[in-house]
Length: 171
Image 1 (cartoon, rainbow, N blue to C red):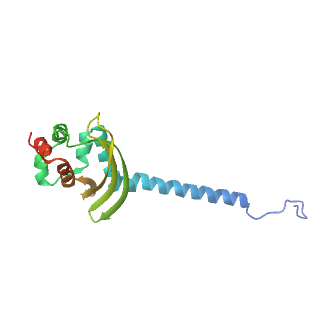
Image 2 (image 1 turned 90 degrees about the vertical axis):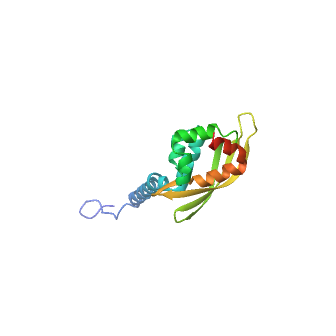
């Protein structure tokens, strides 16, 4: 449209450019929110810590597993280092199954304690069939870092075979 002076008529804001700016703002906010969750919040969660612990167990990376394991003083005497944890696992006489995969489920957090429902896929050795077990894994927040409760691990292992566990601990 032309005005009487021969100049094009000024139109209101272009709706298409307004929608483009709105879409870009929504996309930027979504990316920012995801980034904040992924790189700030999630690494501080009990699920993240448990995932690191279980991934380390699958890879038999005892340094990372030990770093993500909360050991009260009496257990720290028995397992003082990652090397001691590795010896314990290797001498366990079949008590500790070989973890192959896992799936994390619901999480209940109360103060500095969390319980995570997980399904663990394992076998006792390379020749045995794969099994699955539900577990309510207990996590402890130790100086703002979530760790798997070593006492819970000991109770789980002992429920599988007290004699073999004793041989492993005191071998």
